[in-house]
Image 1: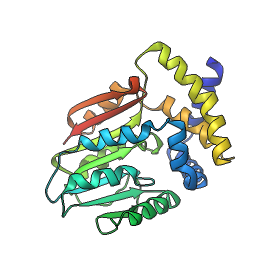
Image 2: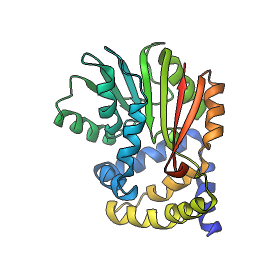
Image 3: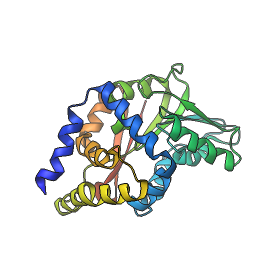
Image 4: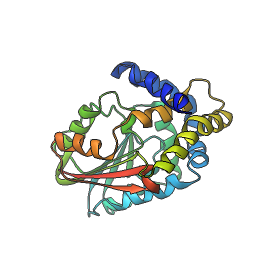
Length: 250
């Protein structure tokens, strides 16, 4: 068990930032059409609850601007939109064109194309002016970026003073028994289920748990956020720490 759970993590850790990013993009392009279905199956539907809680932590504003980084199929962007007020706007950005196309369909189906703009962009180089957004969110994105400190610094740059960064990401379970169970699920059951549903041969469902293993845990991510200049950094564990929401104020 221990050998199986550690091997994929070693593979991920040897990738350079650019090579990692390119590999991630290829994998997500391959599964874009079944991404939502797989998320629901593999999280037992919990990802909807996690995203709703993350969106609820954004302070409502009357005419706000929010950015969802790594928006994927736009689930979180759709939940953030009401928090920005009747005349507010949300930009859903993602580097992966196939994932963003799925999100654009969802936005259009809900009649929100005039309020949620889908934009292809890298988390490390967002291209917006300083102090643009009232809030920035990410949902299961940050562990996939090539340069995490650069992405965090870039996000802080474009948030208005007093604005919040809400980061929803897989993290480290707080109980030993849960970590053992989660490792078995992640490195044995998850790849099997994901591959059967998505019929994927790129290795994405081996990469995903490995990327979680190598991502900073709750306290380490707090340190990275503070090093980037965020203040009032805190986190909230969900489902025993399998997922954590970090809240950081500029």
